[in-house]
Image 1 (tube, rainbow, N blue to C red):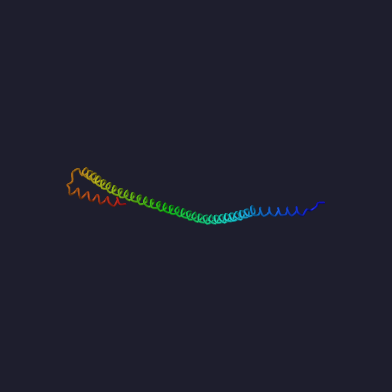
Image 2 (tube, rainbow, N blue to C red):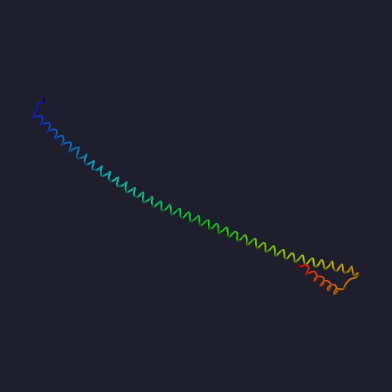
Amino acid sequence: MMELNGMLLSVQVATFLAAMVIIWKLFWGPLTRFMKERSSQIAGDLERAERGKRDIEVLEAEYSTRLSDLEARAQQEIKDALAQGTKLKEQILTEARQEAKRILDKAQGDLSQERERVVRELRTHITELSLQAVERLLGQGLDAQAQKHLLNQFVSDLEPAGKR
Protein backbone atom coordinates (compact mmCIF):
# COMPACT_ATOMS: atom_id res chain seq x y z
CA MET A 1 0.00 0.00 0.00
CA MET A 2 0.85 3.44 -0.09
CA GLU A 3 2.42 5.37 2.62
CA LEU A 4 1.52 8.81 3.44
CA ASN A 5 4.24 11.20 3.96
CA GLY A 6 3.01 14.07 6.12
CA MET A 7 5.59 16.49 5.01
CA LEU A 8 4.99 15.87 1.36
CA LEU A 9 1.28 16.12 1.86
CA SER A 10 1.55 19.41 3.69
CA VAL A 11 3.84 20.86 1.00
CA GLN A 12 1.45 19.74 -1.70
CA VAL A 13 -1.53 21.22 0.18
CA ALA A 14 0.43 24.46 0.75
CA THR A 15 1.43 24.56 -2.93
CA PHE A 16 -2.15 23.89 -3.98
CA LEU A 17 -3.46 26.64 -1.71
CA ALA A 18 -0.78 29.07 -2.91
CA ALA A 19 -1.67 28.20 -6.54
CA MET A 20 -5.34 28.75 -5.72
CA VAL A 21 -4.61 32.16 -4.18
CA ILE A 22 -2.46 33.12 -7.17
CA ILE A 23 -5.11 31.89 -9.61
CA TRP A 24 -7.80 33.64 -7.58
CA LYS A 25 -5.92 36.92 -7.52
CA LEU A 26 -4.55 36.82 -11.05
CA PHE A 27 -7.26 35.04 -12.98
CA TRP A 28 -10.50 34.51 -11.06
CA GLY A 29 -10.97 38.17 -9.98
CA PRO A 30 -10.40 39.58 -13.48
CA LEU A 31 -12.44 36.75 -14.99
CA THR A 32 -15.31 37.48 -12.60
CA ARG A 33 -15.07 41.20 -13.32
CA PHE A 34 -15.01 40.44 -17.07
CA MET A 35 -18.04 38.17 -16.72
CA LYS A 36 -19.92 40.85 -14.71
CA GLU A 37 -19.02 43.54 -17.29
CA ARG A 38 -20.02 41.26 -20.12
CA SER A 39 -23.25 40.41 -18.33
CA SER A 40 -24.09 44.11 -17.85
CA GLN A 41 -23.13 44.84 -21.45
CA ILE A 42 -25.45 42.09 -22.65
CA ALA A 43 -28.20 43.38 -20.35
CA GLY A 44 -27.66 46.91 -21.76
CA ASP A 45 -27.73 45.58 -25.31
CA LEU A 46 -30.94 43.69 -24.57
CA GLU A 47 -32.47 46.82 -23.04
CA ARG A 48 -31.44 48.89 -26.09
CA ALA A 49 -32.84 46.20 -28.37
CA GLU A 50 -36.11 46.25 -26.43
CA ARG A 51 -36.23 50.07 -26.66
CA GLY A 52 -35.49 49.82 -30.38
CA LYS A 53 -38.27 47.29 -30.75
CA ARG A 54 -40.71 49.62 -28.94
CA ASP A 55 -39.54 52.55 -31.09
CA ILE A 56 -40.07 50.45 -34.20
CA GLU A 57 -43.57 49.54 -33.02
CA VAL A 58 -44.34 53.23 -32.38
CA LEU A 59 -42.93 54.19 -35.80
CA GLU A 60 -44.84 51.34 -37.41
CA ALA A 61 -48.09 52.54 -35.81
CA GLU A 62 -47.33 56.12 -36.90
CA TYR A 63 -46.51 54.90 -40.40
CA SER A 64 -49.73 52.92 -40.51
CA THR A 65 -51.70 55.97 -39.37
CA ARG A 66 -50.03 58.19 -41.96
CA LEU A 67 -50.59 55.59 -44.64
CA SER A 68 -54.27 55.38 -43.69
CA ASP A 69 -54.51 59.18 -43.79
CA LEU A 70 -52.85 59.25 -47.21
CA GLU A 71 -55.17 56.56 -48.51
CA ALA A 72 -58.19 58.44 -47.16
CA ARG A 73 -56.92 61.68 -48.70
CA ALA A 74 -56.28 59.92 -52.02
CA GLN A 75 -59.78 58.42 -51.97
CA GLN A 76 -61.25 61.85 -51.21
CA GLU A 77 -59.26 63.42 -54.04
CA ILE A 78 -60.50 60.71 -56.39
CA LYS A 79 -64.08 61.33 -55.27
CA ASP A 80 -63.59 65.08 -55.70
CA ALA A 81 -62.11 64.58 -59.17
CA LEU A 82 -65.01 62.31 -60.15
CA ALA A 83 -67.52 64.84 -58.81
CA GLN A 84 -65.75 67.65 -60.65
CA GLY A 85 -65.68 65.54 -63.82
CA THR A 86 -69.39 64.82 -63.49
CA LYS A 87 -70.10 68.49 -62.85
CA LEU A 88 -68.00 69.47 -65.85
CA LYS A 89 -69.79 66.87 -67.98
CA GLU A 90 -73.17 68.23 -66.92
CA GLN A 91 -72.00 71.78 -67.59
CA ILE A 92 -70.77 70.82 -71.07
CA LEU A 93 -74.03 68.97 -71.80
CA THR A 94 -76.07 71.95 -70.58
CA GLU A 95 -74.03 74.34 -72.71
CA ALA A 96 -74.35 72.01 -75.70
CA ARG A 97 -78.14 71.81 -75.22
CA GLN A 98 -78.35 75.58 -74.91
CA GLU A 99 -76.23 76.03 -78.03
CA ALA A 100 -78.36 73.49 -79.91
CA LYS A 101 -81.54 75.27 -78.77
CA ARG A 102 -80.08 78.62 -79.79
CA ILE A 103 -79.15 77.23 -83.21
CA LEU A 104 -82.58 75.63 -83.57
CA ASP A 105 -84.34 78.86 -82.54
CA LYS A 106 -82.20 80.83 -84.99
CA ALA A 107 -82.94 78.30 -87.75
CA GLN A 108 -86.66 78.49 -86.97
CA GLY A 109 -86.49 82.29 -87.02
CA ASP A 110 -84.59 82.21 -90.31
CA LEU A 111 -87.10 79.71 -91.68
CA SER A 112 -89.99 81.91 -90.59
CA GLN A 113 -88.41 84.96 -92.21
CA GLU A 114 -87.69 83.00 -95.38
CA ARG A 115 -91.29 81.74 -95.41
CA GLU A 116 -92.60 85.29 -95.08
CA ARG A 117 -90.28 86.46 -97.87
CA VAL A 118 -91.41 83.60 -100.13
CA VAL A 119 -95.07 84.37 -99.34
CA ARG A 120 -94.50 88.05 -100.18
CA GLU A 121 -92.78 87.12 -103.45
CA LEU A 122 -95.56 84.66 -104.29
CA ARG A 123 -98.21 87.31 -103.61
CA THR A 124 -96.38 89.77 -105.80
CA HIS A 125 -95.94 87.18 -108.53
CA ILE A 126 -99.58 86.01 -108.26
CA THR A 127 -100.74 89.60 -108.34
CA GLU A 128 -98.73 90.27 -111.51
CA LEU A 129 -100.02 87.09 -113.10
CA SER A 130 -103.58 87.92 -112.07
CA LEU A 131 -103.33 91.40 -113.52
CA GLN A 132 -101.91 90.03 -116.74
CA ALA A 133 -104.73 87.45 -116.90
CA VAL A 134 -107.37 90.10 -116.22
CA GLU A 135 -105.88 92.41 -118.87
CA ARG A 136 -105.91 89.62 -121.41
CA LEU A 137 -109.47 88.66 -120.50
CA LEU A 138 -110.73 92.14 -120.73
CA GLY A 139 -108.57 92.92 -123.70
CA GLN A 140 -107.79 96.29 -122.37
CA GLY A 141 -105.73 97.88 -119.70
CA LEU A 142 -107.18 98.82 -116.33
CA ASP A 143 -106.53 102.09 -114.67
CA ALA A 144 -104.44 102.17 -111.46
CA GLN A 145 -107.51 102.51 -109.21
CA ALA A 146 -109.24 99.49 -110.70
CA GLN A 147 -105.99 97.45 -110.59
CA LYS A 148 -105.53 98.27 -106.92
CA HIS A 149 -109.10 97.33 -106.06
CA LEU A 150 -108.92 94.00 -107.93
CA LEU A 151 -105.51 93.26 -106.41
CA ASN A 152 -106.67 93.88 -102.82
CA GLN A 153 -109.77 91.75 -103.35
CA PHE A 154 -107.75 88.90 -104.84
CA VAL A 155 -105.12 89.00 -102.04
CA SER A 156 -107.82 89.06 -99.34
CA ASP A 157 -109.42 86.03 -100.98
CA LEU A 158 -106.02 84.25 -100.94
CA GLU A 159 -105.17 84.95 -97.28
CA PRO A 160 -107.74 82.61 -95.69
CA ALA A 161 -106.70 79.86 -98.12
CA GLY A 162 -103.01 80.38 -97.25
CA LYS A 163 -103.64 80.23 -93.51
CA ARG A 164 -105.35 76.86 -93.68
